[in-house]
Length: 43
Length: 576
Image 1 (cartoon, rainbow over the protein chains, first blue to last red):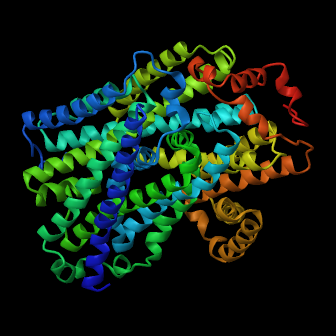
Image 2: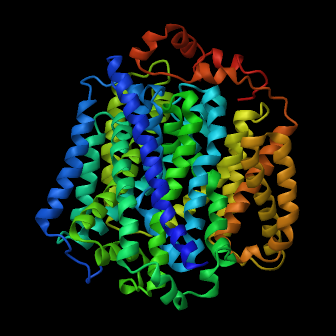
């Protein structure tokens, strides 16, 4: 694999992790807000 | 112990980090604490948790310290494809179980464990076999996480291994004991955010600090041609293939996954499992890249111990602040899995042992159930700490248990779809598979000549079963049969006369094959016609609080509880 390909191959994983982190974080706070509006615990 | 990186932190720093981590986690769990906890919520949080928490929890639970260390080891040993052959298949364990998970929730929406469903489907022997294997697996996992914590603390601080083990055990128990699964999943969210944030920063930082991408060129001579190949057959055969065999086995045999399957809102199963698949895969493969980078750098871990790769890379290239972040990442990874293991074991003892077998579902006292759950956590922690001090070979134990779970996969999955599977077929097939598995796994006789060929032929069947089951979940029976036949035909020339040299893989495939053949043969001619609707009636809530909310379900549940007089009469043709 070329240097560029290896660089992308190495650094794509933290980028994906960051994306999943944003997705899960957004969903959590949406659930939290909804639970608070309904006067319930999130869990 | 790695002398070169010992005492990276002072005692006060480590104590502050641990107090901040476990203290913060405890405070979060304290916010949801109830004076009078509900027994069902203690096990599955009311079967209705949302996407954010469930996806975070599934991801956090599946990522443990060993998966990061092992992925880096794969990268260091097999080169650029190594982390893929570890992380990808581990991630697919989550993905491939979700179609089965949807079916399991459809027939048993309020269950607490797959073993409990097996009790409703078959009876006591099937349930206890599955519950027993779940407990053993969780105890090994718990012990492994305590060991990882002890090693990390001993490596990066002046404290000893035993002090580290005790600290991690006490910290995890502190926030999990009172609220059980509810505390586990909520704290998982915080832990996974910490882990993800750390990985997103640490990987690029070490990458550039270690002089990459230039080092890809200067260090290329440190890799063999196999290690440079993205399609390394060596990496596939030694790392990837045994994991493919274990994909379904771990997902079925691991109560931590089943518990989350029963906890998440039913319509969110698919997005939860897919998100967790991507999150786990990216995280573990990403951390595994440390092993690849170390290989390019010509980095040699102290004492040749590949478990030192990650902590030594971190200690070598990270400044003190990021080293603290790294420390929290590993502590978070092992704690999130450890609290899940405690919750898994407690729910099995509550629902499967006390609820179904000691008191009986109709008479089970929710207060006693909670006591059973908490005492289980205390005893499991004490046992895991004791075993951790023995420093057993964790990966060997896990590979062994994982292969054992292979014997359960077909009988368990078939029991959710095929009306003809009976308790006798389930039990005999699993025992027969184990009877074949053990002598092959431990090579009690030489796997040569005719014996080797016979084992290979069963391995071909095992490969067909695994790939067939994987496809069955997504595409149905017809496609599964076609894939299974093609898999057998294609794999046979490569397997027969060759694979018996790999005893671990052969034994695992043998377990799949024997359990499938025996279960199928004992069921196909039978006249059993199980009514799957009965499972929903026979499983469900134990606690009065929930029962009061749904009296009709509770009444039918009690009326049809296993062991009650109506149990046998409602099962058409089932010879239990």
